[in-house]
Length: 190
Image 1: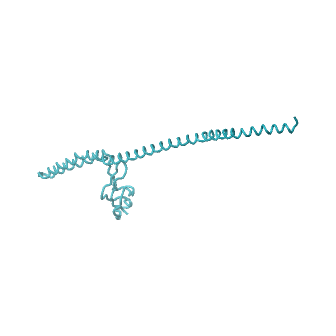
Image 2: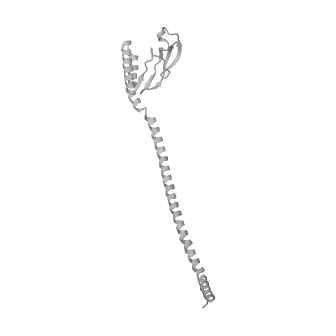
C-alpha cells in the first residue's frame, strides 16, 4: 500500500471511531457532569447542614440568654422587694417599745420615768441601726466638706480658727457602710 491508501484507511477508521465516540463521549460527559455536580453538591450540602446547625445553636443560645435576662430581672425585683425585710424585722421590737412608752406616758405621773424609757428606746434603735451599718457623721467643729455636708447658711466665724469650719449642725448626716446616705445640714463660719 502506498501512503495515500494508508491515509484513507486511517481516516476511515478515525471516522468510525469518531462516529462511535460521540455517543461514548456524551455518555462520559454526562457521567462526568453528574460526578462533578455530585462533588459540587456535597460541599454545598455540608455547608447547608453546618449553617442549619449554627442557626439552631444561635437560636438556643439566644433563647437561653433571654431566659437568663428574665430570670435575673425577676430575682432583682424580688431582692429589692425583700431587701429591707431584715432591717424592718429588727425594728419591730423598737416599734413595740414606743407603743409601750406611749401607753406608759398616758398613766405616768413622773416625767423622769417617761424620759428614761424614751432614752432606752432611743438607745435600742440607735444600736440596731449601727449594727446594720448606719453611722452618724460628726460635723461640728470640723472643716466644711461638700462630700459630707450641705451648707444651709454662712455666718461670721466667732474666731479666726473657725473660718471654713462647721459651727452648728442643723440636721445630722448619716453614712451607711461608709457611703453618704444623708448629707449633714450645717452652718459654716466665714
